[in-house]
Image (cartoon, rainbow, N blue to C red):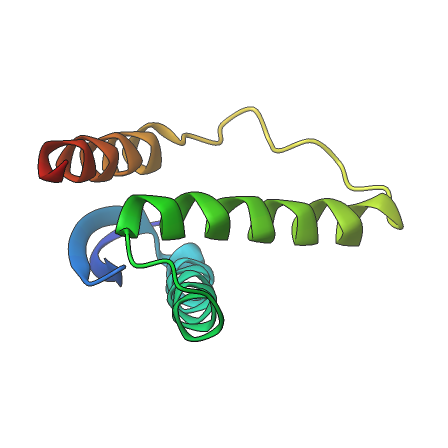
Length: 101
């Protein structure tokens, strides 16, 4: 399978990624979910700090995912799964947010 370059916007920042062609829609959907959750938190709470919003969103989406998978037995990710690019993008986001404080 071929890899493609993709730019996703999360919390108003653009992140370049290289993903498997079959994962493009999944990654774009995940970015949309994150942005929608951030917007919802901004609208419903007096939180304006982006790092706080990202942390709250991460907790919200993680618990939603945990609830969904609790009812179904999901197999572990395949051994060839490589999350290094996503990890690096999240680290860069965290570093950028830390630099703002």
